Length: 483
Image 1 (cartoon, rainbow, N blue to C red):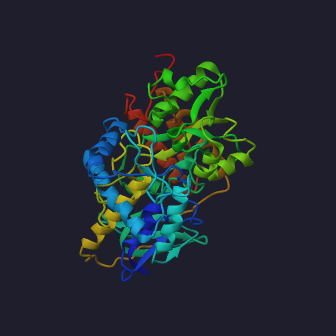
Image 2: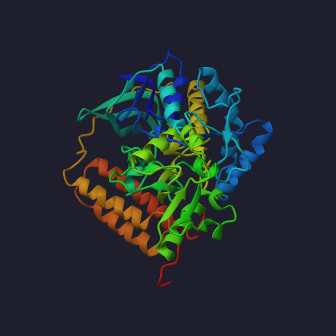
Image 3: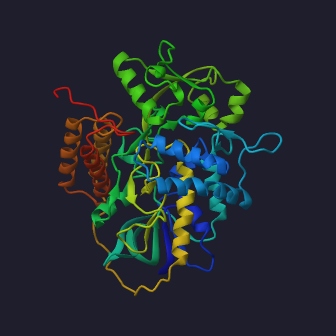
């Protein structure tokens, strides 16, 4: 089996990339589970863009400000300058964003944006609508229920992948491989990610000596309903706060203004740390209040959240809902250039949440994630199509490594607790060193390759956090009590 392009992952980034590859090319998408089990599907708030040429400098500046000085300005400019054309392309293909009664696009505002520039679809189901639409647009075959467990690399060039398909490993060869496999949610005890987002490709890259970048930059969403048994928690979109929802403690006090003059509209890292700190100081539960919403408007603007919260027993918008921060988005990832190319390995690309384009810096600006996947997915394909492929045919032995052991599940759960308790919103050197010691101990035990992926990714996050002494963006390092 030999392809022109293999795309690993079927979220928005991978699917949009696929739509730009001609049918004449031999392309295969590889998806680990059911197609909807990806982070794109669960994206609620919307997609940001520079509305017009005048808005580009503002969108760029908002993104740079949120990124706290660690963004690549080149990558941010590429993102913003490409955004309007990407949105127009989706609309021309038939995608329907929400509009007012006169047919005008509806823009909303989210935290750290200087103006209303976020489009949405289906009220609070932008990712779901976009994912379904791009699935329909995809002209290429897809291999589902298969996971990539190796990259076929020799002399600094990628020749394909090894897939675990129905418990059997086999090699699939390609001139180019695009990784679009998503983030690291399953490393944390509380997260908003799809259940199968388990940091495989990041860990595999560590094994292959491929550089990861900014792995300490893990974003936690401040408003999540965590009172459920499942690892994936219910995200309460930032658009709620953008349109009037307020954060308050048990006494009904809007304490966020103690931490930032923007209150609920401060950036996610600030709001998450404020909630964490206030809860620790007061021992009070934090709530999201919807009392500023008209009932009819709330049900139409946020229909899915309305149904979900009603089923959980909350009479919204009348009743407030308990919230907590939870892991949400991996800012760091596989290091790439602005074409999605992995610098050290020819014919290998990474796009979307698995990649680090440095467009988000130390803190991702709200609703820039879907846009990033679309923009750099298209650029990766454009880069591939301009190349002349002249690589020789090589064949690799199929790895016989053990993928999982019975005892791995308990160790995965232990890793989730370690990461949540010691490598989350507020970090200390002692906590990070303790986490590193425990992760190294688990790596020295007899484990399957799939767990090894997770542990290696987790270790990169810890090492990145230990290497950065100063707090910046989502990385908040607190002095230990005995310092």
